[in-house]
Length: 196
Image (tube, one colour):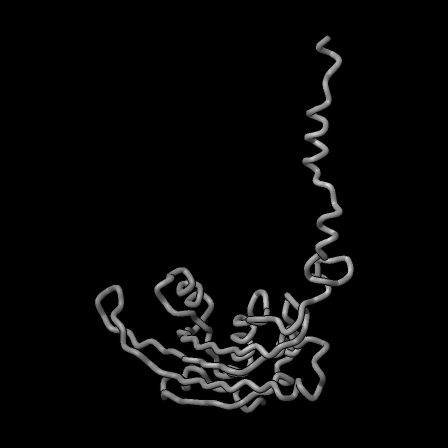
């Protein structure tokens, strides 16, 4: 049994708090996102800090009565190795996410929460709920669609425009090329023999 497997209903009811650090090696789906170019020694430095807090809140029901709802607040932060899609080099991407979930008893209640945009996300609680699996889910959802540096440290070869590897074409190359419109103008000036 893993260290952070909890009874989620009791966790929320008693207002428990759990926190810890989890290395990326213990998150198999996140580990597949680490670029192959990152050395193994660097991969071991990727650690995510997480904090989970359960709580209950009394809320008004539609029929005018009161209902006690259970919640889980989860915060996760850390730096993740990703591959920049502009320069194709690995870089450390800061990640931070905080989500509040309503703890529900079954899938039907979770589906009802999904239908109402005003309610927080719902998770189906259990007596053996793995907090680390939820941490990994939240990290996967927080990954950027297109990871990239703010400013790339180098230009990838596929982005270079010049034939000799220069970013800008040389001046003489620009002057040597005839304008395609000059050829069109020459055709327009040729007198037509059809009008005679």
